[in-house]
Amino acid sequence: MSDRLSTLDSSFLALEEPTTPMHTGSVMVFDAPTEGFDYDRLVGIIERRIAYIPRYRQRVRFVPGRIANPVWIDDERFDVTYHVRRSALPSPGGDEQLEELIARIQPRPLDRSRPLWEVYLVEGLAQDRFAIITKTHQALVDGVHAVDIAHLILEDSQSPSAESVADTWRPSREPTHTELVVSALADSVRTPSQVVETVQSGITDVKATAGRLLGAAGELASTLARASTSPAPTSPLNAKVGRARRYVMVGTDLEDYKKIRTRLTKGAFADDVSINDVILATVTGAFRTWLMARGEGVHGGTTVRAMVPVSVQSDDAELSAGRQLTACFVDLPVGEPGASMRLHQIAFAMRQQMEAGRAVGAETLSGLGGFAPPTMHTLAARLGGAVSRRLYNVAVTNVPGPQRPLFVAGAQMASTYPVMPLSQSKALSIGLTSYDGGVYYGLYADRDALPDVDVLGQSIVDALQELLEAPRSRAR
Image 1 (cartoon, rainbow, N blue to C red):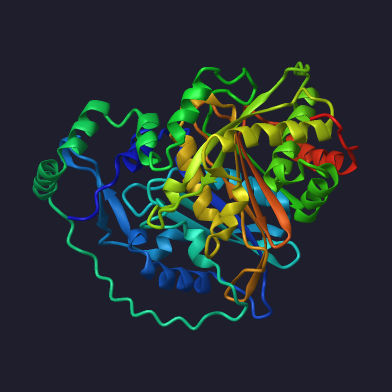
Image 2 (cartoon, one colour):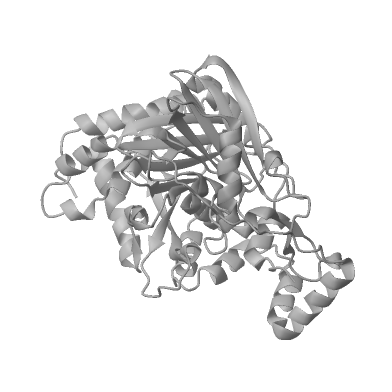
């Protein structure tokens, strides 16, 4: 029998709703090579690369009576051209048109009768560019058996690799209903606790499941316990989520964050402030401006609670990437008027949580091999989906990537933006990826709850400039 989904993976399918599909995405913008780039070339690349990851040719099959978790089975009618699609903007397409296309593509649920991923080639961008948009379900990417599809597309060299993969894949016969039931019963004999867990919980208690998944890190349960004593503050970020979305891309310069860290953190506490802290301070300043532009009351004690996935140090080399993430809950000091003071308050709050265990800053993730950000963003989204909705207002996921150019078939990637999913009552998600000297924000929002998400995007640019010009704060 094919692999059975874990209880956590099953929960992402069971709890998925029409308004909150549980897949992550990425938007990669490329400069077209001299010889051009077309749909057939992209199909060929993906067709060769997924030979290394069988999961991308498997679909989910549920067990009759739901007496056990679903299983992954080979898709006998697998057609790569169904998953790799083509779109275009009216030339010359600008960023606003691309953002609107992303906002329409990303909310559409993936077809559960097929492998849970899609890729779109978007042509017609201005300045002789094209984009690749990806969608990968959280149930598929576990950091062990599969990585995000965007991870497979890119390569380090401008010269396309001469891949010669002997693809001998032939789909296994699909199991019958009887075989699925017999296999489930056999598994219950081998691992009876799995069946008890599935029946008792009905795979609805995702928080408990996440605690078991990340138990090796030993930190999530205690973090949740501390955070649950103080529910997240009321915020316009928490609203009923519908089907429609808005998406805003914001590109900034990594060097600016380094300058801020160097200039504002001289002295005994310099090592306590990370680039991730500067990013969170930038987001905090943006929230302050955005709330005030909305006419919301902002006073000295106003905060926005962010869930910030961070990596966890481990001596266990066998520990999967998915088990090396845990959550920090940070009350962003939106009410603090001083930009440099906001930075120091955030650095102190993050250090307090990290010193309680073995958590380390998100910059550690850049040490992973290959282009880790798409996969790590998906794993972080899994963590966010597993945490109680009442504990935070917004998830802010920062996954630093390689500071060198990456390519697809000779085309250099100019920028890359994550698309983090929304959950019920979370009307905004913020994902960041640093790449080749830039820091790229993807703001994904409910269309009705945050019609002014573009104002928040501009506020990020303004908040970064405010930090660049801020005087050093003497208070700690």
